[in-house]
Image 1: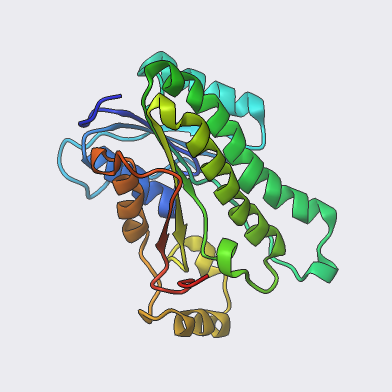
Image 2: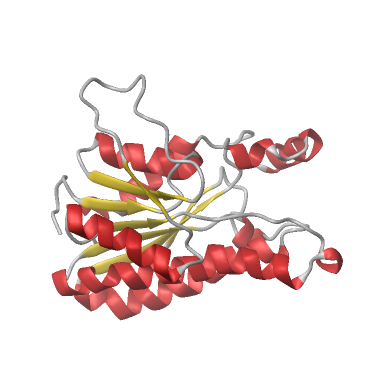
Length: 247
């Protein structure tokens, strides 16, 4: 893996929000970046610096192993093996446990946790051969603090910690690092669906008194994928304004 730029980067769930901000930050640094999406491809680079190239958009549902394999095959055919993987694709289906059907539970776990397993398992083939690689899993402060109506979401996000730390031990000798970023509330479309009263409650719980921007989360992700973070693996980097500190 190159220690500089022009690396091959794949960001799942990269058509909007945190994923798109992460993809654009890698792209601005000179990396070749592919993003997966389920329904809508990422917006073009309008208003960006002159000469900026667009992202490679790949339709992919991470609950489908065939989709995941096809996405990786496309990237490998065009650019070569993925050197940096950011597993960001995720969904929420909030409901109190007594009202939560097993299908709602399973959909969130299959996307957020098993989906991460699928893309990481596919990515490490090339990383192990190269004896180098960076993997960043996007978790959530809810995975550590919990949240009412979010038993499925919190379970899926906390499960990523066990996955990351197990893989950090498995892959460390091969030069591959595996880390977690755990955002708190972030100004994305997902947060737009939250009722104003609940938003006020969330913001009041954050010591910094505001929600994060996607770009602030992207900065943490790209740091963990950088050469400066070469001796960091199996860790959680909270980007939550202090929301879950001490948990």
